[in-house]
Image: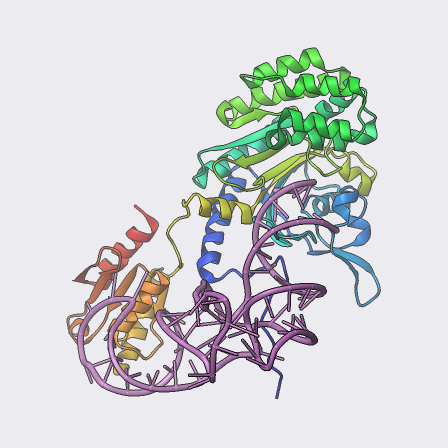
Length: 439
RNA sequence: GGGUGCGUAGCUCAGCUGGUUAGAGCACCUGACUGUGGAUCAGGUGGCCGCGGGUUCGAGUCCCGCCGCACCCCCCA
């Protein structure tokens, strides 16, 4: 006798039961459509990579979160931490692929950090990147994809914060802060929304920043901007040379975003936005939803130096990623998830045990006509069969008893409208299709 | 790594100031109901009360430790 095993999943991972999985698929299908609409094609890569591929790309903090182990042959390997580094490896291994190269990849990644709301050890990234061009129009397209994705899923209030790594560089140069403190400085300033001006200044003091540096930073975080243009204007008078390069990048980017139809209301120039990963070099962005308590649902930016590590050749690149779980959670919290629980269109009921074959023939013919059909396989009466359809959220049920068989018709019941009607099979198919696919 | 909270049936939970054989709803199984919605009725399966120790005549209940989970900080999708 086998000992009973306590059923459990690893911390930070979860099962998605059909009700959830159906809605996750709904989100993924929407995103896929948009990626394709912008000219991206799919790419698939292994979940496991050699350690040499993963190591040394993300920065010290992030690298500690990579799942790393030895395989049965003693090879040093790890689970992918994101989809950007594997893409970079693919480009290096296939340098002749036509460029600019646009690809999307919707796949799980793994991070060994501590889970909480909207944060898992295994989660799906919906990643889209453009390799082989320095054009800022590419960055603009990435952001346009983010905007269109969130909008089409039904989010109304969100903002896409944009900045450039060059602006961050300019900030620390202007404030006379050593370059190795670039990340730390950006991170502290980034907390402005949470801890306020006083909080930021206090933390800078505690970390031992020079008074002159703190003064410079105070100048930027106390400035109120009424528009993105204001922010850029401020930047022009504030930053040194490399900061100015970043400012002009942002100007060009804003211009392109207008052309691509991304409304200014959803774009926020945030001169303190930093982003954690080491590989970013130019414009960076992060998208946050309003009215919900969730971390950012999307992030990305330009990483012109990353592919060179693998190939020795320069390949400029930019891209972004949407977090499936966080998008799902956001839709859930805002209560704007579509009301679907199943892909099944119709339940073919079984009038009586003797009628199973008749119902099965009907199910087959409905399936051939393109419907998703569940033939009732239990042994309960009609009442219970309707209860089953109801529980599963199947929108239609068909009755196929002696009366219908005799007249060559079916009785179609609309579970939502609570109405039913006798009709020809073809008519039933038409009614169901109209209801589930729209006009 | 730091902080807060919670662990009782498959799920959601009740169990008052420690006191008999451990409770409900849902789910599941059996039966009744033979053309219509989350049913009703009758019965049933199912619990090392997270684990270990302590206090006590007596612990699901009080104390300590451990483990697990959720959330927050940090960081991130």
